[in-house]
Length: 511
Image 1 (spheres, rainbow, N blue to C red):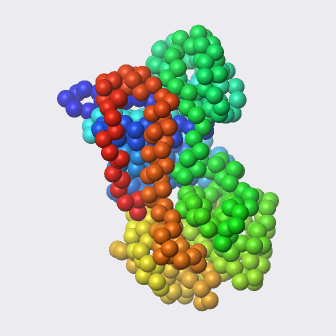
Image 2: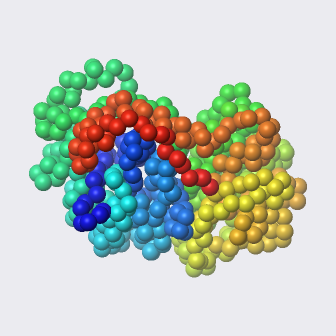
Image 3: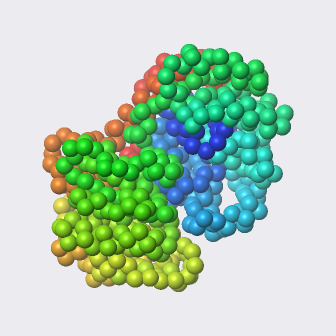
């Protein structure tokens, strides 16, 4: 904001969860950026264990990091000032402006969250000072009127910040007319007036056949249609925000692949986008092993991913019988990799004496690495670059963990990180390894060497693929959304929205 003038902004609210708000904001960020505007993404409150580290050592939701990439800028802790990271069915770690504030039950957070609104508004204003346009993403449903009194994520924020709203409905789940009209029925008149129009997302088929439905919705609500967005297949190439997406990622994986990778679907899985580069490899069949399923006998590599609750998920892993499956996998000559909490589980013991991630306690690990972990603060949050210790191949990513891991196998580190020294451990036979570095599989040559593929054959460029998918998403929206209407709703000139693309947004190194 400059000279007391409010920065133009627009908020996308959903008729429910998982209607595609995150991808729509990412695509619009890229589209408006390509047209010469300085754009920033913002989500007042997010609930996700898929998080990203900001350059100044904060953490935000992974979706906002992707949206920042779409804008061609580094992520900022102000882009997601409140992040809830579920640790149990009724409690979460509360991260405010990038730093852990508390662990809270759902009831405790309900009492706490209204007091966080000033910090949310402070972050929104901080982003606006350097932007031509702020694109805001809501959380859940715009019509959660039972929670309205303390809302900071949807209409509560929109009213407090005086931001216009576009409503997003998901036709793929069915009942989209009722979604939009029902939202109108539940909202009080001032909030109905704040909504400037609606988008129908994930449409399959001929959009012209839906025109009579648009007339019905507009007739019932008075809101104009701003577009019917067709289903976007390219979404598979972009990181998912919510672990619900993993429910659709089980199965045998890519037919004819040379390498099979199995990732365990832990109950509190975190940072699961670590494995998107593996899934994108043409020569790899990656499958998420769902609860109740056995680890595939044909797996070449089994991966234990990160978790928001290491001890709880270690018990969960054993309850699925995956510890026995891993033993059999190693007996067949397979390899095992642990990332962050998965690395901790590979050791001899995990102790949480202070109850940092849940009730205080300890449990023996899988005993596949001669290391042990003690949970204690402060939380490590940093971007990092380095090399694989043995090959010297470059890696990049970020650390996001509680706890300290030590033991004899640390004498064989997997990685060497600039400014952080050795990271991780490797077993004596080299078939078990773990580390704390998230995102390392995004390093193309390192990834292909790990998979046993030819790293010099000009294979997948993962980072370029993500940017290509963002460009394709922007093109997809440009063809189906009324950009003049969006510009008018946001308070920017229609000429800016209609300006031809200048260039693809330059993107910072994702490491």
